[in-house]
Length: 231
Length: 232
Image (cartoon, rainbow over all chains, first blue to last red; front, top):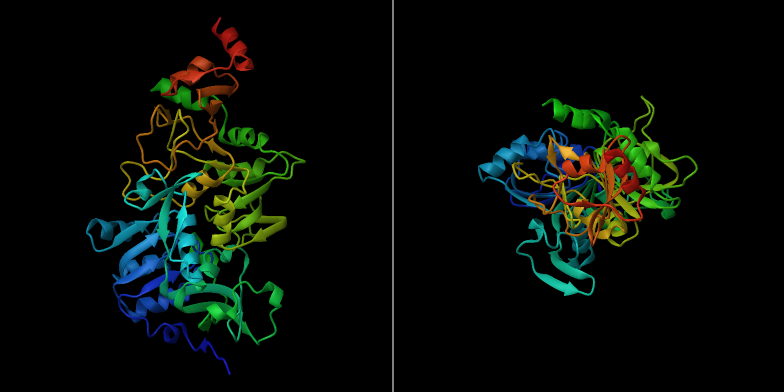
């Protein structure tokens, strides 16, 4: 019988190794798997490459891993916010490398990673500083950049509801990067507000099919995201 | 100093500017609003027009700000502020959201700017003295949207934002169609910048004085007549 549920966030992330590439869902505090990230700050894996859209928007996000000196490289689109100072310091002293990627290119690189497409051409960032040094090709629409897929060793994602197999349903704009990141990791771990029996979620409403989800952690009480966002 | 203060006070207020932008959004359009000043446009859509607002974090059908106490932190806009969803709205993932953007499905994007050139080059993601850039969805929106409208203050701390060539890092070259500021509405064309409309009490010469690139008026434009009257 398939059983993906782990007792705790700590047990679900226990085998994450130093040097791993980690995809972290969320857009600011919305859809941020803050319990999995919190467990990782205690577990202590180091030299991580972290792929996440916003860095520094909330304290309990990737900013906590940065403060804890667990991160070697950040790939993101928006490294700005009230908790970005530690990132800025570490970029200055050379302990963290930052790769800024346009948000749509970031999403598509992750999608490509999950879909078995090694690279693709996009017009976004052509003729800009972020396109410098990239392989280019001229199509009839104009200059395009070759962008490479991103895959994670792990993805931490947040959803509202799972069934025992790991089919997922999200809540409003919590969805953001979570469904696409779920497809692109060796081990995808979802923290959810509830886990129901197989068959209880209408198949027409499933957003992330179970094939992408390897581990589930149920939150004890619904996380108060208002606190996370307003900090 | 007193002259600078005067310059900031004349023309449209932020809300009037947002309303002026909203006036040009047509019934049935799908429109993305950038963070900052452009988000005000959501609150001033003219009555009777169905304009479907897109939020890059994965939503179509963005509505006005919720009543106090009704906020849901899983229902936010691109600036991570609480918003509402209109009937007919939908949620989708980031890859879907940017497929819409890049795929040319949005009729317009209304964005902020640090600098815009007379050729329509936009600089909006990195200031020269900032430690980090913050690109978000701006580069995708500028290459993908059918129209790019800027909604911005005409000057920043007394320095013109409309220039001959951008000195800040570009978001995208040759992408801006129309610039809405507190002083004027200006069209970007291959023949240069044309003043389409002046804010009440603002003269063409005054806008030119606040702009570091040559402005023109079309022979057919009503702007010219008004300006000449003022000048006489």
